[in-house]
Image (cartoon, rainbow, N blue to C red; front, side, top):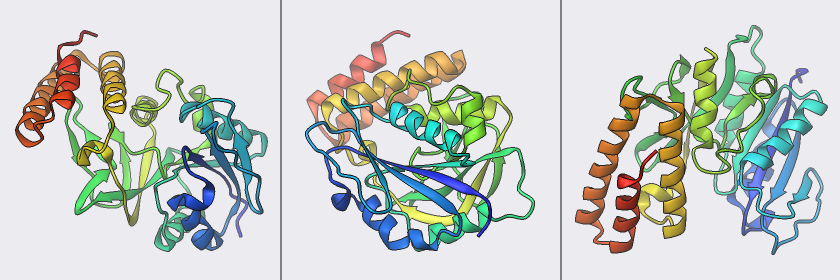
Length: 277
């Protein structure tokens, strides 16, 4: 076993650990991880109390801390414990045996690049790669990354199963609480690009659900997501990104109207479309 060490944080809401696909999968496969690690189970649901267990630390938040505060708690633990890496995990993501083998290969490299500050798997929704993606440097448009390797520039990946350099995230002040839930991943990977660091895409595929694509997102969640999306594009990116974002939002609105005939969902998207910065 190498001297590398990982802090793992699993964020739960509305489920007990044993009901979480991620937790069950972790128990099944984490023995394959050939580095030292500590697991934090961070419960954001005040109606549920998660007891501490063998092999993990339970944290019951006094209110819903969403993602940014939960991640910052784990980041501070990683820093205090001298752990070089922080692994983020959502409750509905299922890490596989193959994922942990790919993670081992990355973590146990003999000559790791100091510029690589994140490592992510390929996430699939059906036959479609949904993470990571390249962001067009001019337009609000993304292209899936389908081949493993080292990437730099405008890259974005989902929070879940992002392995992040503790030192790097500390150097940017931790996870931004301006994006407590939605678009936190975009903000984080934007920081990686701004600081001219790189992302390693691991040679492993994992299935993942996406409520925005299958239209299972609640109306309130959709409104919150669109507000965060607009705030990110307007605040962090360029005017041309913002204009193209509005165009793509208009296209999304038309598709919703044609395919779903869901008046409420269409109204929420229309409100986001006409909303100002």
